[in-house]
Image (cartoon, rainbow, N blue to C red):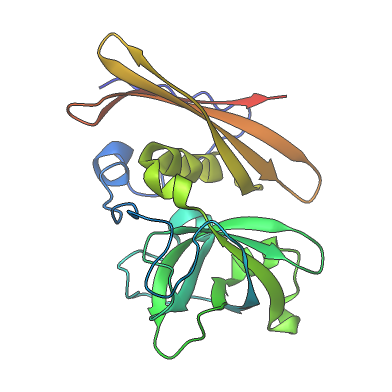
Length: 221
């Protein structure tokens, strides 16, 4: 398998060991939702007003996904909430409109359905001081990304490739066939305290074996 990482001046290491493909790309995520609503009646496309607190995380999670996943852009939700393990959620700080995309890695019993417990780094990425403890947020589940597993993998790679930036949005640009393989292209919006940039991520893979042929990240205007 040949892979190409073109990520400009931002160096990064593999957070999942020496062979990133063996452990990284074979990570099991839940199957996508069949509909946009569940038995709570939530529309997974619509934002929900709620609150966010913060935590340092822990060694063990209910989802079996470490808090360090996605460069600590992670969160816990209520055990009975409509948000599931591995799901990507967009969280917006109402006070300053800062946004982060976080992965659900833990579940808490008896936790309100409209409350989310962010890792401290995700809380701070929203421009909030930990001294506040709790902030008002808008929570938007991202069902499209759940259905696009390669987009989710590219998102996590982009987070690692640009460690001083946080992903705030994404879009799928195209999907084409190439000599029996599939090419998917995504665009991610990355923000730091100084600037906002767009990253284009491309993955070419064999749809029969799910083996990656190439991966490429590049900055675009």
